[in-house]
Length: 594
Image 1 (cartoon, rainbow, N blue to C red):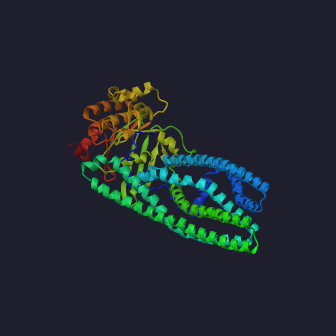
Image 2 (image 1 turned 60 degrees about the vertical axis):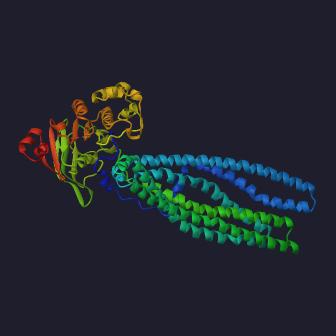
């Protein structure tokens, strides 16, 4: 579909509620985590290789305290040759550990970035496939937050799970076995810290998961407010409402601050409490170890190994507890990403009708409402033939744009049928059906980039000559040539560095590039001056030959020569006919002219 504006999604869309299926309920912690790991399956080989490397490095790390203990005994026993061998062995192990850790983390980081890149692409593709109703009831800033804050939180999962979590778990198991092998009594003195650490971690994680979710939601609100302020700054300043907007922002910012502070306070308690447990563990090892040395049950080297093991043992325990706590933030972000990915898409079934449309359109007792208790269209009926120019007029809020929304298949009718060339529009393949339309909306929207790029958006393979032909037809060619860089002029976001009328003409030229079968002009000339309107109207008259054209306009002068005029009021078509016939009826249309 050639849609020449997306800002605002046409008038009236902000009132919509989704009817494209039920929203998937938020996943549980376990389900979300399992699904999150599943998104990284394409990097399985790299992750397995990285984990194996880190496991080998961890094995070396685990053996170091044992070798240090042996070296201590060698010093006390004055075994110089054994000491030299042990020192050389330790040196080789340290070099190997450093290299394998670096290589493993490099591979995991690469796999992590690849997976997050794919996930962000999936999220963008999903966003493009969602019905417009979805965006009408959500803050755009919140959606952008899911692309940034939430995706960034998700990216930490791979490294933490594949490297830190697995290696920490392996370290704990390995050290436990070695300690039991060396001395059961000292091993028990160290292992007593395990239930204390995990008990604390579980208690704190229950507090932090709620806070992290609240923080992510609050950041989404802030993004939405910033977006609104940037877009509507001229309105804010013209009404002198800066203080009001600042007050609203402070409320949202305070909410994010409170959630963030609470999350950090609870998570910040973890490490100090862990340190207390760690120091108690060291003290117990020193106390029992010294007693056993005095009694002659163990050597000084064994106690030295245990002191090193106790420190090495609590480190991965702390990491496991910290990971469990920090993963709560990542899971909260993942849930928000999956919420979007689980939304029901606009229907895009490949086996549906793909034949080109001709433009014979009929509405049969069509009723529609954005909210179930507020009818917008009430059993309307009309029909027009291929190639006809049809105008829809009426007061604001009458339902004019809603008719266009339904015809474009942006929304589904609550009752009745819409036929194009005798077929229900729901029988057409969604993407193919939209490609038959060229739409110019009231709010002209241009993308950042050159004028060439914006007009070529309607036909990506268009040549420069084709683009200039379209601009000449719409009367914008001369205006573009007056710019310093002509067609290479860079437009800012939304095209705000040119006038509204110029933006309108460029969007019309963009629509022409697609050569649509059905042309929809929603207030297409409402933003240009009278001189420009005459030029555009003349060009559009030529363009509309052989096409079905639907025009919505408050300037009735632009639709006098329409083949059919539909007069809409309070969701009903109260009059229809040509300009002359409606004048003769002396009805509402005639009142609008006077």
